[in-house]
Length: 289
Image 1 (spheres, one colour):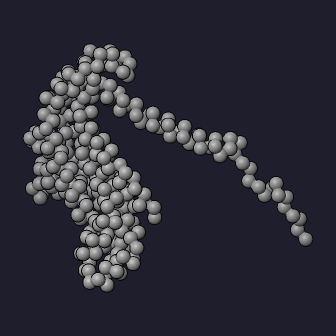
Image 2: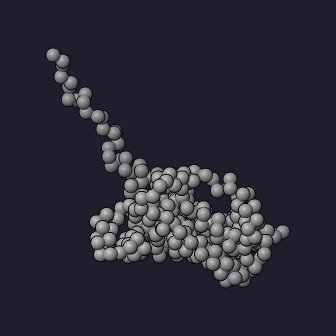
């Protein structure tokens, strides 16, 4: 007859700091990460309100003589409204293309049954692990052959294509979470696939669609590499290229570079704060599986 295992030996030893200590350590680590992440941003905001002499002198994070003149001068030099229109055009059309094309593709992956569905779906997901810079040269050569190199269309098409893996993953999971009973009820009422997609799946997937729109808009708004390689006409420049022109002079005024960076990033911050509630719920719904 085997000996009984003592109850004390079967118990897992508790952490010496207790469950509250583990949570406090996690919060401390997150707080340190937040400080490290926010510190450069705070320096950017601080530099945007300094004159060129104070920013060269270094000093404190808080400007000793804050001024709006740096922002006003940079706004004029940056020609913000002209380049803003170009960035808004590229970003808006990219987001619209992503939502239209990949919502339809994700509906097919989530609901319809067709040959090769699983292969195509996992092919899209596998593209998440392909670095974008590895396809930069083929994209430029292809755009040159198609005659769209140097145009806004030559930016929009690669941006839409590059967003495919993450968008398909998120929207497919969101559409799979829609109860099958709703689809069956719509079919009983005589609705076709297009009507089911528009009246049932799109409204229920709205938080995920908004999350996808934000995740697509932010990198498109800030994109520099392909834009720098593709565009040569200053009239078609987007805001990141306009910011580069501030930093490319013989004498760099770092306060104006900081002010230009702040002007560019403010629309992104406003967009995220406006859609924050939908963005978080959309991520939770798309990634819970």
